Amino acid sequence: MTLRILLINNFFTAHGGAEAMLEGLYHGLQQAGHKVFAYACQPMEGNISHGKPLLDPDYIYANYFPQTPDLEKLSLPRQVLQMPHTIYNQHAAQNLEAFIRHVKPQIAHVHGINRYLTPSVMQACKNNALPVVMTAHDSFLACPASTLMRGNPGTGQTYCQDVLCSTDKALGALHAIQNRCLRGSLPKSAYAALEFSARKWHRLYQIPKLYSCPSQALKHVMVQAAFPKDHIHVIENFVDNLYFTPQATEETAQALLAFGLTPGYFLYTGRLVAEKGIAELLEAFKALPEQRLVLVGHGTMEPEVQAACQASSNIRLIPFQPKPVLKQLYAGCKALVSPVNWFEAFGLTLAEAGALGKPVIASRMGAIPEVITDAHTGLLIPPANAEALKAAILTLANNDALCETLGQQAAAKTRERYQLATYVQRHEALYSEAFAMLRTHAR
Image 1 (cartoon, rainbow, N blue to C red):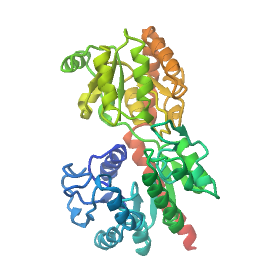
Image 2: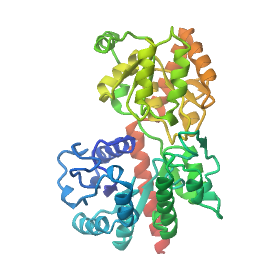
Image 3: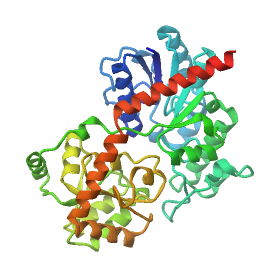
Image 4: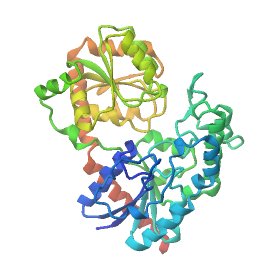
């Protein structure tokens, strides 16, 4: 059945992992014969997506996109003034209602809408009798800070396994304030807690007929936050087809020369932030001077990483790279390392490395054990444990045969489970089930 599908997300630009999934779904559904529309915020001067091209350069409906400021760049007083709009964006709802009347979609698929579009867009869909399904890409439906980490990053955080802001009926989001969960800031944590409480009060996130998320781990968190278990589908993320293309050894070696690299290093790619285990990573490689570490990315811990590079010749930092270059960096590594200290809803870089036949060392946390099978496609270690990380590094460094076996098994698992075609088909099934629910309720 050919459908007219409306995809709704804060950004329709190359912004992050959720947008990468959105782009693949947008084009994949089109290739499957569906008519696909997108609704997002309008790129503007000062907007977080300013200067980035739309995921579809030929998209003709961007005039419906509401303009929104970059909230991260506003002072706290100005953020407070914006709060009514970050809880319920009336302008976004009005524009969407006009857009729905214009293009007449049959179903809306909502993705990330927190603080920018806001759940006002789901009310707009409901006002127009448009059925809604929703994908949760992270834990924002259960956690004010969207991290599931409790405490001040400066003094140490712990994994909030009990999802206290959702499960503690007495204190609720006050836990986020008490523990200063958002960047260690009391005002920012209070602001996030107020937004979170407003979400639970207005109940607009209960509008979708069905939900999806990329892992069983995130589904469990959503169930803890009182979303109906039987209405949540697990649809794992996909790996870009680029990473499934065989890589010539000579081409990789030539590409690495541009960075002064030779194959055989350990690779980290992602944000340089505390919750990604950067401190433990640097500690481990400082103690292993014969093993090389290449980090690709940027973030708040960049000064610490640069200092480590100056102090230790076996540590290198490279800025974020486009996918074709990143593919070469994956291809040249011995293994990927991802010693995260927080809840990962999926872990896309782990699957990308697997597609190229590389084993992974990663923390046993969140959805990571779903992507990495211990001693089969990689090695799992306890989080925040530099000693365990060092032992895993040495295990792979000293055993090329094990690396080869784990890498081959990782490639097979990735090809079987994380294909774009499968991702699209599972969403088509999600839409079909939503329509079936509507027909059942109409009887």
